[in-house]
Length: 82
Image (cartoon, rainbow, N blue to C red; front, side, top):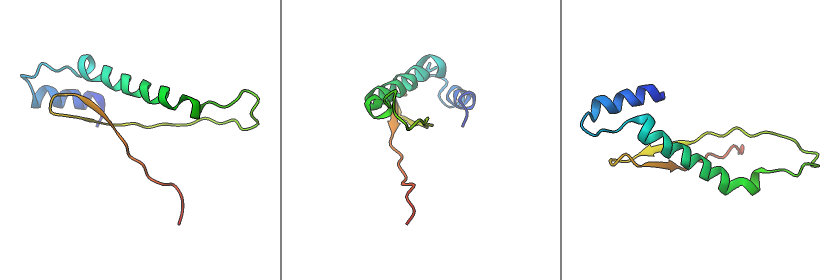
């Protein structure tokens, strides 16, 4: 679901909540994302002289509880072949 679709859903399903996606939910998502990267910083940084150069692509999954509190979820799937 795209942000604008979820924002419309909140407005229609919870009209009396006063919750606005951009004002109330996105700041929580941004904060959790930054905290995740800060927590993993030492594992993500390579020394400048490292012969191994790469980039990583990250995806995040979030859940929103009944009080509109955003929670980061852990979704791990091993890429290892059996």
